[in-house]
Image (tube, rainbow, N blue to C red):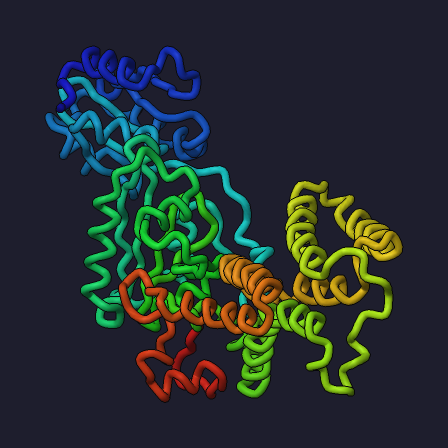
Length: 470
């Protein structure tokens, strides 16, 4: 449907379509431009007041003799702004207005002049809380999409960098940007990804990236291992694009999605590359070892507590000396849930009280739990290690995947002893090996299919030559 050349008909149409009389923040301003009746539609809070003042001052100075006969001439000669476009379709005009653009309608013109003078409420590009590094850039993505694309452009000044925008959601019309490097990414996967995004039929992306991820990969929800890598760091995103990956940015989200992603991509961290090779190698190996220990330590402890005769003599000191009133399997499972409960409590605790309450919880609850007989010291020690060590992983999704597998291994070990312990490890390996990336390739590349040079880089941080890989 096209707008009318009669300004009053256009105003009535837009007022009805956007409920302008009911919505206080949808502003319409009647002005005179070059002797013709005109109207501006915009959303209060999105436009820049300083720019509006200068633009309106310029419009008021236009005389009837200077006014062109069509919108193309007006846009060319009388719009003192950079980001300007013409639009005649009503649906697209409404989307532009609700997205924050200012649309000017002039009597006699069959198209409106859409000016992108919007400014979104935003915070500073400070370093993200959950993705910090000891050395390196201190900026991070924010909730404004344009700022995030600019942070990547700042690092890759190459015309081959492509950023294509899509609109997803019939109600939200959320902007989604696909960033890729021509000649480096897989063109077939890029085309398939764009096709999937365009084919999404949802009302809105309520949870931003998570909603988009579930639309892009709706299958095998029961496998907890993540199919996407998330990062709030623009340097990580830029490095991934240069390595041939695809980065997806979603408006209103301060993180990017990196595709395709294997298991070994997820466990990598920016600090591996901000330090010399020997230090980066040590950090990487330490993180991999800690990840393995977070899965194995409590099932192994339970196995030996059920079979103390298997313990070598030099490890007999690990056997509990206090009376056991509650079975170890119950203690360990209660602690698994209790740790998550404390995490949730910390998220909802006012920041000024977080440290004090954490100390109180650690001292009072820990001491009371042991003295009351509910818990022994050994399960508390091992679960404390697991709780702290889980933060060594940059991916929360991977941490919870290991947690679910650890709890399954605990239950199997309790019921089936050594066979259950082995079954828990086998199920973990099967869940990883049978998983696929969103592109359909192996989740364990470069281990399967085996690629020696890439496999060696997983454990040894080589010297960088002309670039870096995250």
